[in-house]
Amino acid sequence: MIDVIVAGGGPTGMMLASELRLHGVHVLVLEKELEPAKTVRSLGLHVRSIEVMDQRGLLERFLAHGKQYALGGYFAGIDKPWPERMDTAHAYILGIPQPTTDRLLSERAAELGAELRRGCELVGLSQDDDGVTAELADGTRLRSRYLVGCDGGRSTVRKLLAVGFPGEPARNEWLLGEMEVAEEPETLAAVVAEVRKTHHRFGAGPVGDGVYRVVVPAAGVAEDRTVPPTLDEVRQRLRVFAGTDFGVHSPRWLSRFGDATRLAERYRTGRVLLAGDAAHVHPPLGGQGLNLGVQDAFNLGWKLAAEVCGWAPEGLLDSYHTERHPVAAGVLDNIRAQSELLSLEPGPQAVRRLMAELMDFEEVNRYLIEKITAIGVRYDFGEGHELLGRRLRDVALKRGRLYALMHGGRGLLLDQTGRLSVAGWADRVDHVVDVSEELDVPAALLRPDGYVAWVGGDQQELLGRMSRWFGKPDS
Image (cartoon, rainbow, N blue to C red):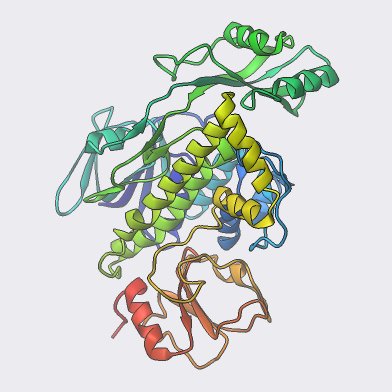
């Protein structure tokens, strides 16, 4: 029997597969497409996702293919500089196209031993007390202990589970694509800048080799957004908004997207779970979609591995929904707010001007940027130290740095006292005795996803937290 079947080989699915393989879990990824997608829906990684890659030793690969930016405009396109003294060692956005992110994560999963089968479409599933039966389009049946739907906004897994997906349907649509242009770059840039004074969701910018990424509002909402627009349709809409079609030609790819905003009612149904766009869809404001999915996988991976490997404490797997569902709800709310601020109506424009004034206060600016970049996330671990429930940034240690010690996906006790012990949990938690001038606590217990589960200096307190997150000690 397979331990875990992952339906969907996008960034969420491949990140999850890698996390599971770090713990020796047998993973099979099913992807219905025969070839990797060329569509560039995501343009980069936010701070928390950059930290995730650093925690697993992948950041150098991503940096080699991306470009670092510390720019404003990530909240409703309001152009403000990044706040100073952000609580991270990676205060930048990493510009990197989604196909490259997909490839790097797929390569990593393959290196760790995950199996990817392309051209395999899941069409049915059933589950019992012992496992899940997945039915493929060709009639093949596969058996696994768990199954995770990472199969996008139109998730087959979610529909088969009959999980509610409440929210708002698409009311607007945009055409998106990469294509060559005949217009001179200077003229094109000037026209785009003028249009964007009133239409912030319009854009045309170079991506290299004479190719431009173009996004323009559609005339209406298509009945089937899986059918790409024609080049003539793009040209017509460009003329409506810019007065010219820039002579666009030779498209690499064309697509369309809408502003549907929905959140799954639950992330777990027995032995089947949802992650990424299968659990939440929203407009791409602030570039949060891919990042949210990768972080879902990072939260779920070690918990599901603990369940498969037999050491998960009671309620650990359910904490995936408890922690990530509110995070997604918060993202949907900040996107709804941004959408309102992009309206051309007088009321929303007045609020937008007020928000722009408020963002001149550094604390307001930082608060909003931390929302977009997800470094402001705090899980509810109960009352306690201000670090409790938050991820810990990559602090410098006397003998290196914190994130370099987390590549294996295990828990970590950073002990500045040298008096504590993880005896009984050494197969799940690393004990690092070292000091950091950046950390003003005796010791901190980190979960495999980097969130602080305990701070203090008392061994008995530590034992209680170890059992809460890492199960029973070895006898």
